[in-house]
Image (tube, rainbow, N blue to C red; front, side):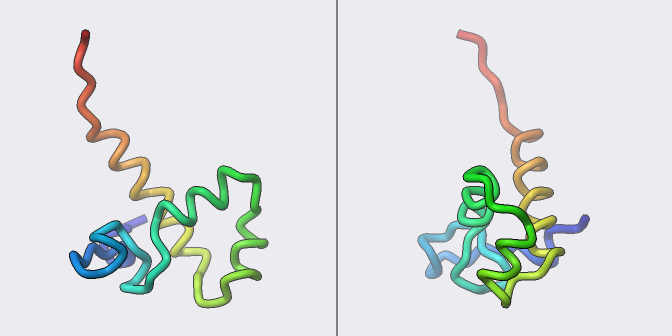
Length: 74
């Protein structure tokens, strides 16, 4: 999944948080829905402007960001 084509960062939109295709829905929003137990199908039904690939892009973005997180020993 090449999330770079789907996830956008715009300083003036949602305080610069990563969004889906320039819309006002953030990666965090989608991940929060999934974490709360919503299924992909429920998200697609509730938000018809979001696609399955948008959801996969959010997951890929989060995985990539997690992989790049620097861990510092205390």
